[in-house]
Image (cartoon, rainbow, N blue to C red):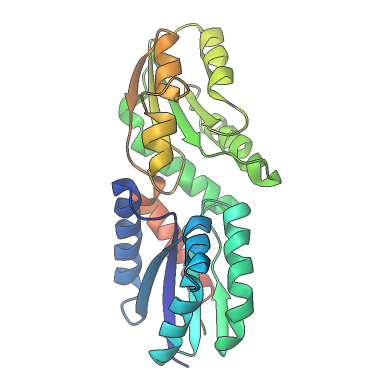
Length: 258
């Protein structure tokens, strides 16, 4: 069987942050799996919806292209953070087309095992080490979800606490801990003067530029500044970290044909 690897980035690719993370992940996978043909596309509900309005299916089109290129074995590696709504949506969209290939495998999202959580925690701590000082709070902001997968945010907070990072916090745009909750938490700590905001997302897309670092009155930056903090914004997604790229590569390796 001839095997191809298809990396699926969640989003539309219009943001420079999305492209930066996707390019880093693609480069790492290409380096570690040079013997395999690599494909990449962006997939989102919006892209699929617009495709159907135009009477086309972007996912099916890519799968047909891969099959026409002579591959009968396919590994799809999403760049999702967790087993959440986006991962399940992609899995559902792929389901009708699995029979197009003799062998088909869907790789795990970034945070799938205890080892994944540990490695990402270490990468996050290393990335923000320069801000790890007594009067600065480091807040990693995730998208958040109403889905049960939201529990990963608390799990990551516990991992950071276990690592001794007492001034590292996890917040979310949707759900808890919200920015209001975070302000209360920081005020109770009593000693912070600065807050460094960093995306807890694979890519620094539109949510980062609008909901985290935007000028709108509901953005994390605005709310924290109004609460009296000096705010520093980091425009770099987790996918730009080498450790995270290696995790995605390991998930691909786990489903490669023997």
